[in-house]
Length: 240
Length: 240
DNA sequence: GTCTATACTGAGATAGAC
DNA sequence: GTCTATCTCAGTATAGAC
Image (cartoon, rainbow over all chains, first blue to last red; front, side):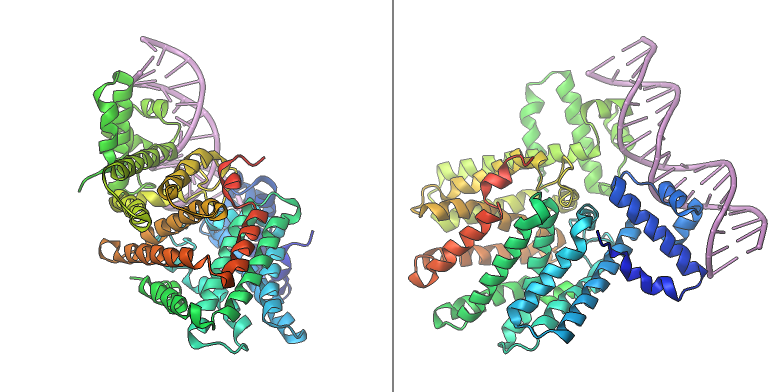
């Protein structure tokens, strides 16, 4: 039952009073969210549990959702740490690297599948600052895609695939998170199997992509996504 | 500026007082939602606009979200009507039929892209009755997938593809709706182009699927989805 | 800048009268 | 079936202690 809060230990050590309080509030909030669910937990509960006044909670976090946002940022930070560490110490081929990226993400989120759902709450509302596909989260999304870019950067790949792959893998990863949330199988085996299988297919597709028979498809897909502005430039930048 | 409310005309004609009131509330709600957005509109606004008391609004709709649900049901009903009519009157080949299904859906939702976002609000919360992927909306989802099943039923297709295609097309359609919501291009050309292009690719892939070179992929994909319980049986039935 | 205490507002939801 | 009155509670505002 290892929880994500390890991340905050960095802050917890060398910190002034303010950061300490902020951390306490965050800790209480996450425990309550995990315990009773996001909607059932009130800001008053959180403040009470953290031993501060309601105003203090609002002083540090504009609202409940921004606490979730802080949590997800911490998740991403931990994910990046895990990956940097693994890339530095182990020798892995492409498939192993991608597997590591996917699996470690699921491992981190394992006990927080309910919290994760809140991340998707505004996915259909472009203008909401927490829309997981909107401009408000562009930076976080860019970082997330970057992880995949790094995982494939040593690979010999044609330029177009180098552009296409990270965003596709990121999309796969987002889909996996959704499935993960709905997955009632023990230890979410279903999701883990699907991710492995999908990566396996991706590997095969990659080597197949060079086949002359499939060339037209490859450029067709790229053209399509480019027209729809679904390539990274769109996803990572502000749309006005 | 043709709006979806035509659908309700069926009710509007032969109806008792109750249905009439219900319809008035729905009509007011949708107008206000379109005008000021879903969250900015209160049940009080709706009741006032419809000329009934707050309690009356709650008598007919358990809450704001259930109004959206009623709206989306009407959308689906209209979609089905349009398609039945088109299938009965015109001769279309497979691609034309699928294009018609996709395009008519976008046409119906054209002016309600903001409302549409609410449909996705609980996509990350399996237990919420309005989760667009959860058990609570299984019936509506089944109907939606059925539309695609009907659109391909006259086609000569191997059994496995017959099972795989409707759910894939439905997924494509869901993705298109998301893109549609975010699409700021005039008349949402981007989304429409993408849908056309994606269908074009689908057609090519279909004919390619018979190529011996791609056989292993086909069965691999199917196996993968089956293991992940992502084929219709999962999506349309209750999960306990 | 950090935090407490308290009170207010607005909105979703419900109970019970008619 | 419909209305009025009321409840609850998230979020805000504020005034002031340190």
